[in-house]
Length: 596
Image (cartoon, rainbow, N blue to C red; front, side, top):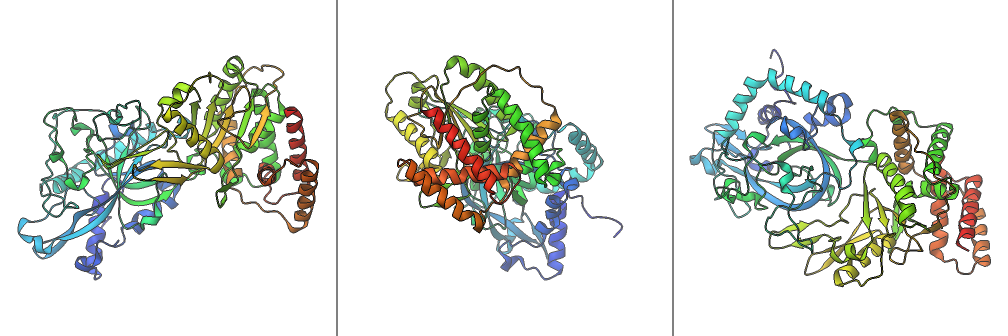
């Protein structure tokens, strides 16, 4: 052969068919394989191991959907908001004496007379949305990528047109979970109607339920949801609320988007196998070739520190600069800035019975509307620029009485209707109680208050499946602003906020911001241990603290150990030292002095 038979980026289905032909030559049997991978995953897996390769693949979002081409390779980064079960499809068929495959495509084609040679395979459906609260700095700039991609697709235009014609000539139906006699998959005509991806946000009633549409609300008017079809992956591999990057074949054409409000638009215009009733003109499909779960590090762009941030002196240098910045934001309140840093580095790293080990919520008190407008606003903006996922929740009587915080199952549409607290692990929540006025909570308000309290204490969110309720584990950092100690949100650490002045806003360079983001992400991911020689010291100190203050309980002692862990990793240390333990004890002493 003189060259590659396909281009993986602009013609991934060509790569699928080519590898299918090779597998057949090597003895692959479609009649007994049940659609098992024949080498496609290995063919595309190198994209996730080679940064230069993955950077060539467009990220699917509300901007790129306007120019990315259908049947090309794309990435989608998002949270699994709902798991829609499995669907059956015509995976392979025999064309005279040759086996062909429909895997990784929406339109199934097979000769009418050859149904006995058609193989029905199975795939999973995941409804994914952009991560709730995802901040703008985490998104890749797509201008350069767009130009490069359009150049590539322009060079391959004629070849792609032939492939698209091949894939859409046949109007045979997909098989559905009900059987093989699904409704015809009609070709959508250009000019039939247009709509935007933002329209998939559903109007909500006061109780949060969708009014008339079966499409769930997106995370914002600009967000683009995606229906991901997963092949050859164990069910235990992907869970609800996981943040995942999917690499796959896009089947969506913005020029042929269907208007759901049009009287001509009906559910017959798409496969009954997709009984979730999400037309491809509203929600693009991505046929997943390979996927990977994402950590905070995957959202850091252009920072070489990910590989360089290794030595404790470098950690200390970045820590000092970040502490100076946080202290300035907090009006030179050094104790508040130290506790805030420990709070930002916290994460749940284990669970014992109903206790989430590693959580470290913080309640800053002595804040009112006036001081909140200065310090609270500045701190909220700063955290949005440092952390990948942040959200703010106003704790007012009106909000608690009307908001839909917990996700609920709608059996009418067979969909999970998201709530505010359906969030990804690692999300930072700011809860503002400074505008809370005296009032009465109704039944919704009481339920919402209990949901927030349970999230604070146990790091779990209750999902309402109507006939039963289920608690889902999560990992959220929670920062509460209040005038007095919050009764709704019993935080791990309570500190009266005492700023001494209002400082001018510090101008931060992009390089500095990237260093701080990398520092926070790296510290959170570090393992940590307590050496044997220090365990006896800790035990003696904790016993002494208990004798001095009989009100100390097991939760207080556990919190001190968590603070010690965070103090160590903030200096880039993976083993607790006596110096860092004594720093924590002193910080705790100063905190308690303020509470008197």
